[in-house]
Structures are given as structure tokens and as C-alpha cells.
Image 1 (cartoon, rainbow, N blue to C red):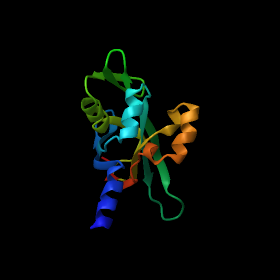
Image 2 (cartoon, rainbow, N blue to C red):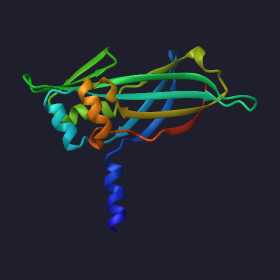
Image 3 (cartoon, rainbow, N blue to C red):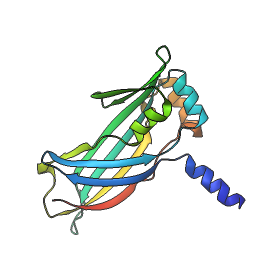
Length: 174
């Protein structure tokens, strides 16, 4: 029973990818993903003290080949910034410098991070219709955006390691 409790507590510190689909649109291929995670007390305190947190999603699409290494069709990243304005007492969620939303509570702001809008990951010409692609997806709290003194501390502090396992699935291009 104690072992199960330890495993459950450790899993709660990570990011779970609960939905991951690729949708074909006129503009190209969009990622529809939902993530599940909670911020631990240390991250909440840092956020409410004015420290922005950055969450990066990486997606890679490769076409398997029997005669050589897999053909990498797509590799892209998108970073979402979550910060708290201490004076206005609101949370901001900024997606890749384009979309900015303001929320009154941390729960609402985290919902925007966990359920991002569909993201155009590939244009129409990047994938060959009818071909199957291996899609690898992961999300993590990006410590590279932290201030330099905190980057060093974050390497040794498990509270600053929030990441998902790589989720792999197959997509047949339309």
C-alpha cells in the first residue's frame, strides 16, 4: 500500500497528456491536445511572487522507412508563458507572443495552459496524403527561460521538474 502511495504521489508531479489528435484542415494539420497537471507549492509561490513559468510543447512527425533512418517531416515547438501581475492581481497566459489572455484565478489560467487552442503544426505540403506518420508529443516546464541564478537551482531541485513522458501515436495524413 505504501509503495502504491509513493508511485501515485510521484505521478501527480508530472504532466499527463490526456488527449492528442491531429486534425486535417484547409490550412494544414492542427494539434488538438489536453494536458493534466498541478503546480506544486514551490511553483505556485514562485508564480505569485512574480516569476513567470514557461511551458513548452514539442511535436515531431516522422515517416518510417525500412532502408534508412526515419524521415523527419515536422519538428516544431510552442511555448506558453504563465505569469501573475502582483499589482493588478491577475494571471496572464501568453501563447508564443501572439495570443494573450487575462484570468482572475490561477485555476482559470491553468485551464488555458492545459487546454490550448488548436495549433497549426504542419502546412498542407509538409505531409504526403495517404502516408502514415509516427507522432511524438511531449510537454514540459521549460527551465531555459528562467533567470540564470534560478536555472542553476532548478537543475538540482525536483520541484522545478515538471514534464510529461513522450506520447507516441500514428497518424495517417489526409
